[in-house]
Image (cartoon, rainbow, N blue to C red; front, side, top):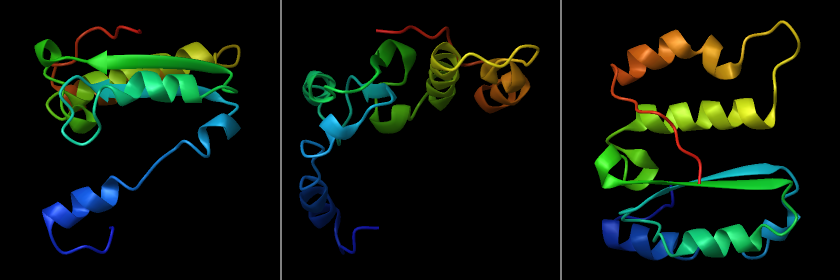
Length: 125
C-alpha cells in the first residue's frame, strides 16, 4: 500500500501522514474511533484531532478499552462492537425516512452473525 519493503519503513512512512492541513475543511458529522492501546495511532492524538475539527457539524469520539477486547488498532478483537457503535452513530446523525427501518435495524441479523453475540452495548463519549 505504501510501497515499502519492511515493517520499519511502513511505520516510518505512516508517521508522515497528518490531518492538520485538512481537518478544518470537514463540515459533516464526524465519528472518531480510538483504541486505548492502539499500536499505530497513539491515544494522545484523539483530543488533538477533536480540536482540529473546528468546522465539523458534530464530533463524536469513542474510545474502546481492553475490557471490551477492542483496544487495538481498528478494534481488532471485537470488530462487532465497533460496527454496532458505527451503526448506532449513523442512526443518531441521520434519522431514517418515515416508515423505514434504522440502519442498525436493517443490519441487525447480519451484525449478530458477524459478532456471534460478542458485541456489547455501544457507549458514546
